[in-house]
Each structure stands twice: as structure tokens, then as C-alpha cells.
Image (cartoon, rainbow, N blue to C red):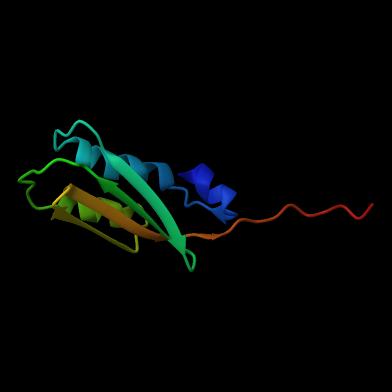
Amino acid sequence: MSAQLSRWHLAPPATMDQLVRLLAATVVEDGGRRISIHLCEQAHTALVLCLGHQQTQAGEATELLTELRALGADSCGTEMTADGRQVWALFPVHPAATAARSTA
């Protein structure tokens, strides 16, 4: 995910890998055989969404949401869909610094 943001000339937050791991681990715990992870960006806000493809009776996600906010998510959530549980986090991204060009 960090590499893709870099290709989009955006600087990923320092906690990007932790955010993605936490989202993915959450849906993996639901017991499905596969997960989907999606990344998009608009107006310097990135969204990472993980979908578990497994119906579950997942309990309250208060601790998960607290952890995501501690990792820098401006907004986050979880919901059950027809395709399984999805968890997501929105977080700010900024243009990557460009290397100074030598005029020599």
C-alpha cells in the first residue's frame, strides 16, 4: 500500500503498514478463506478497505476503532455486508517531497 501511494506521488503515513495489518487481521479472524484489500485516494485523503468475504457474528469493534484512530485514522468503521464484514480507515496523505534538482 505504501508503494502504491508513493507511485501516486503521495507520502504514506508512518503508521501505514500497521493500519493495513490491523485491518487485514480483523477480517482474517472472521475465518474466511480469502480477503480483499482496496486502496483509493481523493483530495489527499486515502481509504483502505478490507473485506472478509465471510459472514460472521462479529461483536463490537470499539477496541479496533480506538486502535485505528491511535494509528492516525481520521475516520474508521466496520460493517457487515452481503459479501462479509468490511473494515475501513480514512487517513490524510500529503504530496511526497520532490528531490531538489541540481542546476550545476
